[in-house]
Image (cartoon, rainbow, N blue to C red; front, side, top):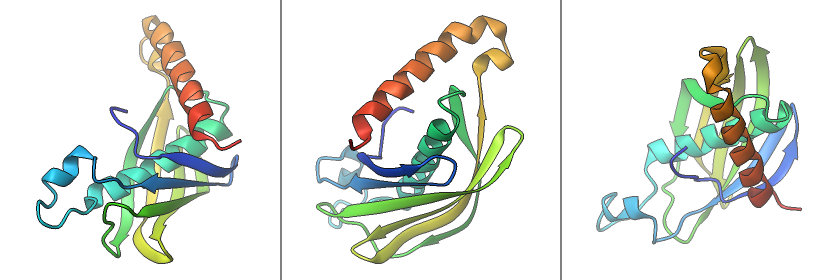
Length: 156
């Protein structure tokens, strides 16, 4: 993950659901281009926020067993109201199904009671060492990184 959109994880029920928040500030670089006279969070980044929340729920549910969590499929994506700087999006994801190396979620983002984004997501998860045993050290570094980041994002 090159950047993190989730600012705080406020509630987590492993194997079930996770709630998080995204605070949109004017200092976010992409707002200069989207759109210069009407800055709003791009829809693809709203969707990415749901993906990140699902990835956190999966990691916590599996005790950080996988180093890599990626989007495999997004369905039924619906966008609602624009999200402007100074606003907060509350994100909720619910685990709906587990498969071999995959997990499916229902996710939604809301701002002040109004829908900003909703979607059904399927995430794939694996370790690099599963494909190349020499990558075990990379897996261990990534898992350690995500555990530390989770410690910073999770409210006590």
